[in-house]
Amino acid sequence: MSGPATTDARSYTSGEIRTIALAIISGIFFGGVATGVAFPTLPLLDERLVISALMLSVILSANRIARLVMNTPAGTIIDRVGARKPMIFGLFTQALAPFGYVLGLNAPPTILGSFPVFGEVSLPGIVFVCSRLFWGVGSAFVFIGAFATITSVTTAANRGRWIGYMRGGQSLGFPTGLVLGGLLTDLADMQTAFLVAGALALIAGTIATLVLPDVHGGAETRSASVRQLPSLLAGRPTVLVIGFGNFTVQFLWGGILLSTLARYASDHGLELALLGAAGVSGVVMALGVLMSGATTLATSRISDRMDDRTLLTVPAFLAIGAGFFLIATVPTIEALLVAIALAGGGVGVAAPALMAILGDLTPGDELGRMGGVYNVMGDIGLSLGPLVAIPAVDSGLGYQWTYVGCAALVASCLAAVSLPLLRNPAVSTTAVEAD
Image (tube, rainbow, N blue to C red; front, side, top):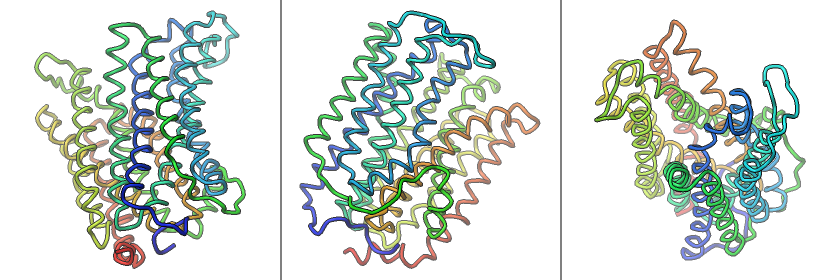
């Protein structure tokens, strides 16, 4: 697994790389916007859809579950047929979800039955679950296809920049959608918000259809599933190391913080101007996302100029750990803002650096599968975080020791991720060889 990933005999000019990368970034950005548009409205739909609170939770998590299951099969398909068609399929499949929401809003509120734990299940509820599943399936193909395509058309000398821009588009799309969704729902209605989300997703798919090249295909591989994850990693310990870094970042940032921040602000009586706990958590997370996007864009070019991108992960993990330790020990609004800026900035540096390293080390005919493995580990972290967070803070641990434990987990990445990668000759020489 040494040397830059290549799939074509030809090399791409700077202009071609820019056009392809911008098409991918626009697809991911608009997809993120469409995802964000739905979030201010979906939690308000339990009474309208005639569903229980647990069924609403299933709707909210269905896309993540579907993506977790589909990541490795999607990677295998991309290795076999190339990234273009699967990614286009993913973008248009994602576009079906918002229109499915509209269908669910207008479906008759027929009760299909009452089930243990889930309570009453209605026809609109089933339509929303299916729509969210479609979104999850599509997003697996989009994210892995984007990684495979950008890695295929770039070299180690410019890969960090374009992967960083891709991650920046992904980071900024979702909060943009949150704002847009809230405004459209307040100024018009939920159906309008969903229709706009679907239109944006269709635009992303159309752009990709017109621009994306047919690269990265032809591998003779069997279809893989989540159950085959251990066998995929057996001979690739470096991928496991990189995946653990992605798991930790997603577990802490997308899992723990998102699940506990509002309650943390409420329990400690944190206020900002006229904002209460909910408003404080929204502003703080927005600051974190903006810091993440800004540092991603700022450090993308820097990673291409370094002999070893792993060096970037050291200050990144230190910043994330310091942020969690600060939240744990100084429960004030000022400390919280500084802590989120530190953690968000660290995530913005670590995530694209790890993805670029993965691209540097993975042979071209394995980009889909290894990208799928990388995404699976991140999705496990995203899914596991909320399950751990609430019981932890409600138990004897409380917020302080829960966040101290998070800081310790980040510190373990220095020993389990940064140190092994720094000692790996393939990582430190790839960028040099490509110059």
